[in-house]
Length: 284
Image 1: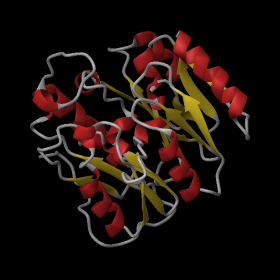
Image 2: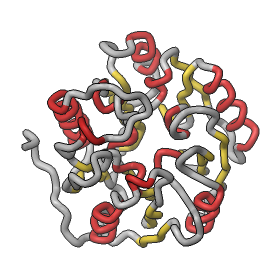
Image 3: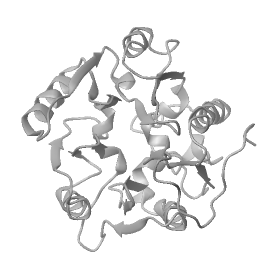
């Protein structure tokens, strides 16, 4: 059991000025069954502790953190971000490009519907595919990765649902998702790795943005470029990133980014299943 209180799902709309944070607890099937690009051993115990630390850190900045029960049939279901894109009062349920993950969204949809979000779907019948990990919303516009998990038809659906915002497809050269390469690390700041792929992504985003004004922050470690940035229940900014025990040089750079609260976390075990920090929550 988690050593702190979290809110169970009940049918009520969350206040608009509060962060809506959805997480999913770790299934016991994770260490053996989670999809991974590179075969490696995962410690279930360490993964459990790291994920509990993650949830606890987020819960301290929201009075409304909703925990969704895991489904043992879907070892990757802890990576809840891939199931839906949520902005404002609308939720677009995704349809993953990986067949083994295509049933994960059902419980997430129930939790979102219970919170009275308007629900839309990426349609399998249309051949559309999308993972939430490919969708970066900056508060002003969307950048969406064209990757092995997300295709143009999926992006078309996102564009129709969130028509009030510009939507920019961005090719992902080799990483799993767009957010494997770029995330927000401030109100108008984007974090990239100082790798070839990171440089290419900077060029792509610079070329397509309609709003501009972004500051680019580079870190030397590719995995450390994935950060969680949001406004908490008091309207203060929170930046969550990989700890100095894992990536000391990158953590030192991110510690200098403008935020009211800096949180360092170890994500070594979930990362073995290609899970980054943003993967484990939906924050809207």
